[in-house]
Length: 147
Image (cartoon, rainbow, N blue to C red; front, side):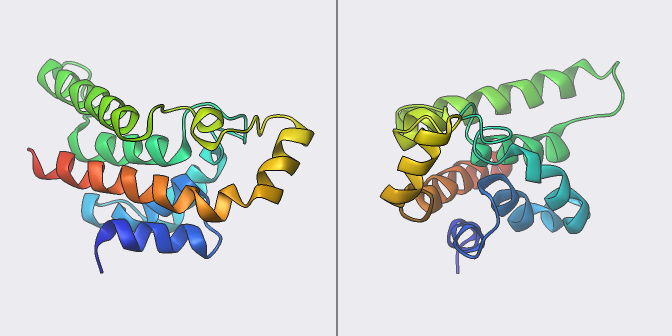
């Protein structure tokens, strides 16, 4: 099973989009799986289900930070590299999915009660979101390989 399939599978069993990504990659980048899954819980649905940046993209960004980031603020090379990887993630996800914004890729304003209801009735969270998670995972996989 590929990592993109694994991540999509986590989404299908109830993890939000961001949690599905970080759960899949936590061990690979040396993160405690339970802690990062808990931290990523707020990122689902575009941070607090506001419809902003897709949680799968946000989760992938966290993994990029864990892999390429630094705690030393004087290491400018690390800072530039992690920013470049983050930009590439956004650009590639937008190219593949037409946007990075949850509300735009879902086609519903899930920040409103009515929009959330419509999205649920249409089944977008079970039908579309696993595909967005798989997309973010594929992009992330390639970014992690490109040291």
